[in-house]
Amino acid sequence: ERSSVVVVGAGPAGLTVGNILRAAGVDCVVLECESRTFIERRPRAGVIEEWAVRALDRRGLAARLLKHAERHTACEFRFAGERHRFGYTELTGHHHFVYPQPLLVTDLVREYADVRGGDIRFGVRDVRLHDLEGERPSVSYTCGDTGQRRVLHCEFVVGCDGARGVTREAIPAGRVRVARHDYGIGWLALLAQAPPSADRVLFGMHEEGFAGQMPRSPEVTRYYLQCPPGDDPEGWSHERVWTQLRRRLAAEGAAPLAEGELIEKRVLDMHDYVTEPMTYGRLFLAGDAAHLVAPIAAKGLNLALHDAFLLADALVAHAAGDSSGLEGYGEACLRRVWDYQEFSQWLSEVYHGASAGDPFRTGTTLARLRRLFTSRAAATAFAEQYLGAAEGY
Ligand code: RFL
Image 1 (tube, helix red, strand yellow):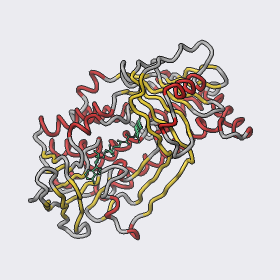
Image 2: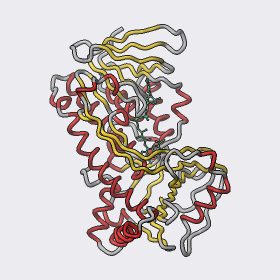
Image 3: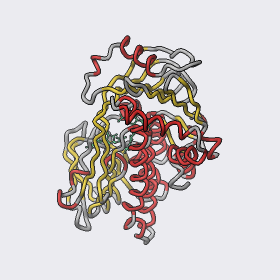
Image 4: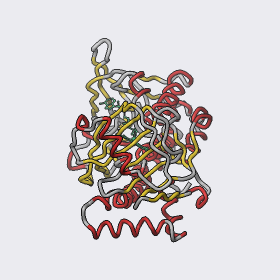
């Protein structure tokens, strides 16, 4: 079998690449190890930056999002028993969109497979990449239903199979450098079957650890609680979770938290990595397959989309005879990747500094926070980075 492009992974990155190629008439096949139902329900991100929504919209991929997403204009920091609203839209004119990742994935699959007639194969197993250095690479896999081994010959392989995928591993060790950062911190990531406790994102800095609230929909709210890395989620009973959330998010004049059943409870060991270069021969990595950013600043999905736009546009241009986009692809992505990594590190200290048990770090953390509310220049710089606007629209 032949196809110009084989995309491994049907997350936001892979599906966006697929949609753009399909619209431009470049043939491609998307291979996904899970089922369609599974990927349409997998809960994860929810914050999409305005530039990314505009870019999706220009490609005809944001109709439902624009109808249903919530627009956020402010977040709130809680520390020392007080609430501090931070209105980023007043400072920059830009806002955040909140739209759960499963809805975005559902929209992108529907558009790719049902509207644009794209080829997507679910439930594949044992994906392997071959001859990436030559002109004629190929991808082999086992069909989920028949168990048959198949080979797809192609011009390019796009690796969008996320943090635990196989495509990154296909690059020989000496040809790539993976830069890693470990925060030494865990986050208990929770989804509660409950309306948000406030109509904006909340960050609670507390001596017992960070706590956060991210509205997702009128029925479901994400909460985070800092915990030791590798902690057992089963040690966090309903009572313990809500007691800690109430304590760490407590502030003068704040409405009580809207409690609800916990429908997701997992511990994330906070870490980052960046793979450089993002390409090897005919393989191009995009999204979490190339770089992971801990969910500290809600940046991962946005970086995945940024890569996908650049890569798909470059592949379309290549088909029309211009290869310059493909040549500069990795470097163009990495600018934003490193910018977001740096911001996540900066923000991590704001979240976690006050609970480090070190009075010096508590002092500097509180100074950082106060600066956001006393200096308009500092506030604007923060707002630009928080919105992803510093890298330009
Ligand atoms: P994905 O979404 O992981 O998709 C990869 C796809 O590849 C499939 N796959 C394979 N298919 C074939 N063969 C294989 N060998 C395969 N191995 C894997 C997988 O089944 C999957 O369908 O990667 P992509 O497209 O790069 O997208 C990245 C984003 O999903 C990720 O960065 C975000 O979810 C990160 N993230 C957040 N990002 C934000 O921008 N804002 C947020 O608010 C936000 N919150 C979060 C998050 C991630 C979280 N977790 C679970 C780590 C909250 C959490 C809790």
